[in-house]
Amino acid sequence: QVQLAESGGGSVQTGGSLTLSCAPSGYTWHNLCLGWFRQVPGKAREAVAAINSGGETRSADHVEGRFSISQDSKGILYLQMNSLNPEDTAMYYCAAKSCSNYYPPSFATADYDYWGQGTQVTVSS
Image 1 (cartoon, rainbow, N blue to C red):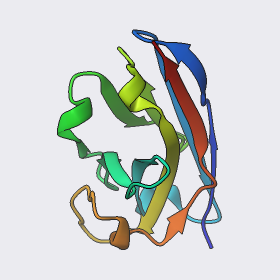
Image 2 (image 1 turned 120 degrees about the vertical axis):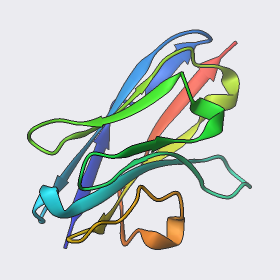
Image 3 (image 1 turned 180 degrees about the horizontal axis):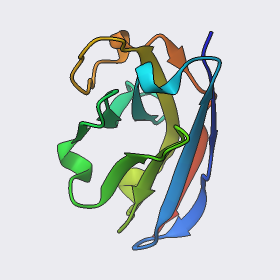
Image 4 (image 1 turned 180 degrees about the vertical axis):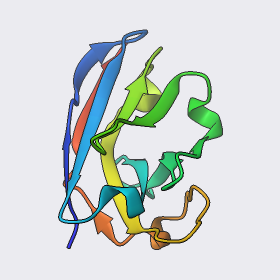
């Protein structure tokens, strides 16, 4: 069973930056594919960025050039968010799936088996 603990959300003004963290536990992190998703009330959860077990990354078009996903040597997942705008306001979720074999970074919510509780990001104008 994988547990995911997100942190780093908060309130910022337009143009500001935040870094979200996600600490996976209960599984060998080298064999996990991970992703960041976000959701606002009344809308479907959407992908932000993803990374596979080989370190290959993928970012959604709407955050390309502003957000970046990374993972450190201890397996902690990060989402660096720059140039934030009010449209980025959402609950942000970390997600994980087992990837013992090659699997490309995925934006499909159905691919992920484990989800964190979420961390709120609010951007004011």
